[in-house]
Amino acid sequence: ATKNRFGATDELGIFEMRDTGLVGVENASQAMLAGRPLGVPGSVVAACVEGTRPILVEIQALLNASAYGTPQRMSQGIDRNRIIMLTAVMDRRLKLGLSNMDSFLNVVGGLRIDETASDLAVVCAIASTFRDQAIRPDTVVFGEVGLSGEIRPVTHVDRRVVEAGRMGFASCILPGGCRRATERIRADRLPELLFVDNIHEALDVVTG
Image (cartoon, rainbow, N blue to C red; front, side):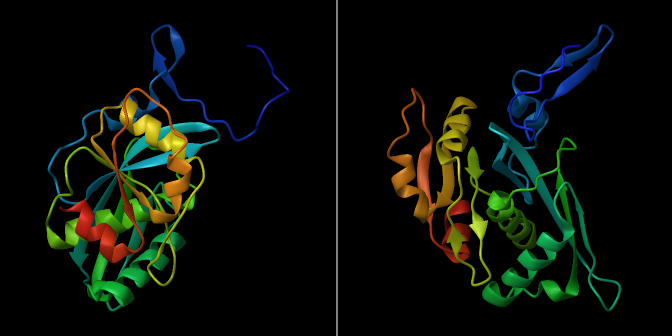
């Protein structure tokens, strides 16, 4: 082992345990999306950035009628308080009636997401399972959701979009405030960029 005292402290390394020891995973997005079901309600691919590394992850959501007076908000890989806030925004802005339903969120692969750019993917996953309608195929989603339901821009837009194109995704749903940032992107293969300004527009596009 070599100790390196230089560089960022928030960089993410992904390793696989084999019979020869720990081996680095070069294509993290492919590893995280392995076995992903297609055309299933409640499943959304989010473009995240951990340190400086873009990673595509699958976020799954499940809703169930609450058996208790207070609905349960359970999550694996995403901050539970963030889920409570996002379900409250959806209940208020979309009138879905989530206050009577338990919600379960999971980031497949065991990765923990700390950035707010996954907000829009969470909202789309919850709405998809609520409507029992799968999102449009080969689509990546990212964006921060505000309390009024607006979609706010995020950082590292170019890395997220390029990674989506590299993995073969056909479209990318992202904040309207990121239009200027995408003008500088240069890559051999880029997905179709679909800009949205609020969660109403996002849900219309994601199932279109």
